[in-house]
Length: 145
Image (cartoon, rainbow, N blue to C red):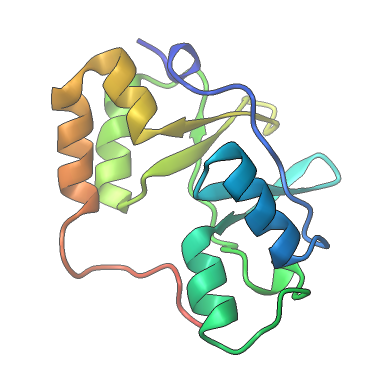
């Protein structure tokens, strides 16, 4: 099965110039913990609820702080034509719960979550990915860099 068969195609995209308050409201409205950030039809980052909590609130930044100041710039992504099993293993290895999905032309076409994998591949595949994501230690993408 390919990523395109499991991903969510209806993706809310934030602008780097939006405030974190606006993006947090969007997250609440669509019940999502992460939103891709796009600029001029290109993926430039991801903004997560954790980015807002750690890089903004904990650092004393206000609700009008632009997304670009707290978003994760080191974007992990996958391609729509990749195999779902392969991507699930990569998600475990990279310790991410969701990935933006790109076309080979580098255009955002969807987002893939562990929940999407569970719905299409079953609990075993999602469980293996969650197990990898949940490992203690390792890289931490919310650094102050």
